Image 1 (cartoon, rainbow, N blue to C red):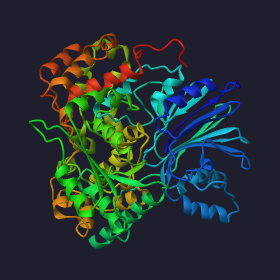
Image 2 (image 1 turned 120 degrees about the vertical axis):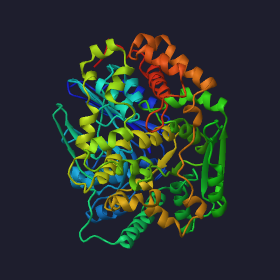
Image 3 (image 1 turned 45 degrees about the vertical axis):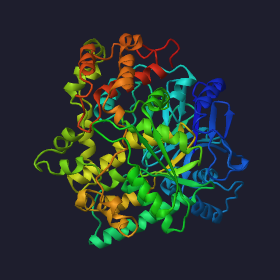
Image 4 (image 1 turned 90 degrees about the vertical axis):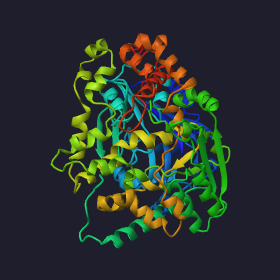
Length: 608
C-alpha cells in the first residue's frame, strides 16, 4: 500500500523532477516507510512506500526491471501474487524480490494489458516501457485504489490523490459544473472520469490507458460485472454454500498476503464481526480489534460498544476501544477534511480518520467490513426501492430514495450568477447518467440493476474512497474482503430477494449463525455513529458558520447566501433522504476548497 505519482512529457522536454518531488512529498502520509523517484527523459515516477509484503529493500519502488526494460510504481496489493509467481516462473521468468510488486512487471511483460484479468486485488499502477516508449496506467475493478490525472498538450501527470496533483503546481482548479451536480446529488460521489475540477480526471475502475511518448492514447475496460442468474440455477442451499466458500476464500487471501500482523476494524455490526469469526475459525488467536465511539446526542447514541464488546469477549481478541469526546472530534475536523482526496459528505469520514490514527499505533494493516451492505443488500433503502410500483422507470424508483437533491434543489443551492456563468450547471446530467447505468445490459431485474450500480459506481466514491483516504492519511492499509472479485461475482448471481431476505444480508446472516452470538446477528442495523456531524450544535455549528461566512466562501460566490442563511437558522431541519445534514454538506465542501484550492474562482496564471 503506497502513494504513487508521475509525469510524462509529450513535448520532448525532460520531466519536471521538482514537481515530482513536491507531489511525492504530498503523498508521504500514504507511504511513511520509504520514498523514491525514477527518471528517464520524458518520464518521471515518484513513490512513497508502506511496506506490507516483502519488507526488504528488494521490493522498494519505483521498481526497475533492467532485463525487461520496464519500470513500475504501484499502490495496493495483489492477493493472488503467489499463484501468479508460480505460473510466471514456469514460463521462465526470474525474480529478484519476494513480493507482489514484481509480479505486476512480469505479468505485464508476459500478457500485456490482458494481465489485468489475472490480477486479484486492489491496485492502481503505472508501468513505463522503455522499448516502446509508452506509459500504461491501470486501476482495480472496484476503484479501491485511486488514480487522478491532469493532462494538456505538453504533459500528463497522475497521482494517488488530487491534493498531490495540486502540489505539483500548474493545475487549473476551475470547478466543474457537472462534477458539482454529482457531488451534491449522489452523497458526495463523483463518478469517474469526472472530479470536482473541470481539468482533473480520474481513471475509471476496471480500466486502463496506454499513452505513447507523443500523446497518442489507447484505453479500455477489462471487466464488467454481471447481475444475472446462472444456468442451471442453484437452489437456495446451493447459493448459500457458494457464498460461504467464497467468503472464506476471500478472508484467507486478504489475511495471507501480508508479512505484518493484520487487525480488524470492529464496529460490532454483522460484517466486521463475521470477519473476526472467520479468522478465529482458522485458528487465529489474540486478533487485534479496534472500535471507536463518540459523545451521544439527544437524538442518537454515539457508540455501539455494547456489540463490539460482545464479539471481543466471545473470541478473546486483543481489543482496543477508543472513546472520542466532542472537543477532540472538533479539533480533528480540519485535518480530517484536509485528508480527503476529494470532498466527502458522510459523517463517517471523521470517525475513520480518528480511528485510523489510533490503530496505526498498533498495526499497519487491517480488515474492514466496507462493501458488505452494497454487495449483500444491507441498506434500508433497498426494500423501499423494491416496493416501488414495477411499472415505473428504474430512475423513478431509484432517485427519490437516494438522490440528496433534485436538480431544482441543486440550482436553488447555488448562486444565480455562478449558474449563469457555467452553462453546464443548468442542465441535469445526473439523472440521465444514473438511468443509463441502471439500464445497461447484464442485469435480470430492477434490484439487480440497483445493486450492480452501487457496487460498480456509487461505492467507489463514497465508502471505498472514504476508507482509503482516512486510513492512508495515517499510513494504515485497510483491506476489504467483501469486495473480493469472486465473492462479488458470486453475490451478484444470487436473486436479490435472497439477499434482501430477513431485512437484508441474509446470506451473511446464514453463514454467521454457526459462528457468532445471536445478539450480533439479530441486532438492528447500525451505522458508524458520529451524531455530532448530523445534529449540528455548539462548536460544530460554529465551525460550519465560520466556514460558510469566511471571505473565501463569499468571494467564490458559489452558494446562494439566502439558502445558507435558511440552513443556519434551522440547522436540525434539513436532511437528505439518506439522513445527511445539508448544512454539513455545504461546509465540508467549502472547507476542502479553502484548504486545497483557495483560487477556485478562476484559473491560476500558470495553469496547464
